[in-house]
Image 1 (cartoon, rainbow, N blue to C red):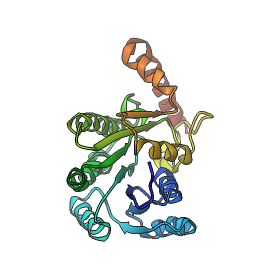
Image 2: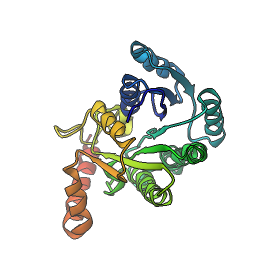
Image 3: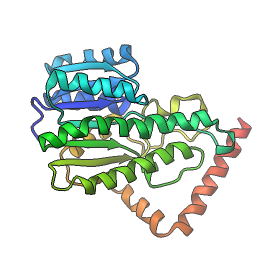
Image 4: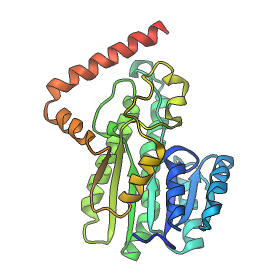
Length: 266
């Protein structure tokens, strides 16, 4: 796809995958809208892309709040008159067994990771349908297919995102508007810097850089596929879990018990 003059809205744009996605689209001369709660961090990212001479808009917004999202959407359409790509990337997780988790922690993850995506999609989809063009990229995780002990609310939000996206994918056939989910394995971002992850297994040699996932986001923005798993060979692991759960689930459970034991020791 030629991204010159294409309007790209990216949530969670102040760091990690979101920041790198901003850079990738700016390199391709897209008009990038940087959305996140932290204006100061957004402005730092904006400074990084000035060298690409691509138009951009910094817009602080808490996507878990419907009214803020609707206001942001109106501002984008008023300024640019269109939207070509929506990247629903904002999200976070908290590591805690359910019996120790606060209801507010569970609700906050769902509010940002799932409902934030729904609010943004509902805000921009009517314009895309009117244009008869556009693409929605939802950044999920392999955790959208694997229930990982200790991060149940995060997994639930990504399962929900994948299910929502699959339904929408079928609804949008023939409209000119597409939706693709990007599901990476562990990514080296600020995700694990939350204090709850202090005893969580750290990044392995298989973990991905934010830049690698951002490149997949760019590919996804013009892809006819429903889901892109990064790296692609991990799709085999997802297939095994779905096909042979009686073999894989005991392995996942054993890993959880080991992690919980290490957590208690620390």
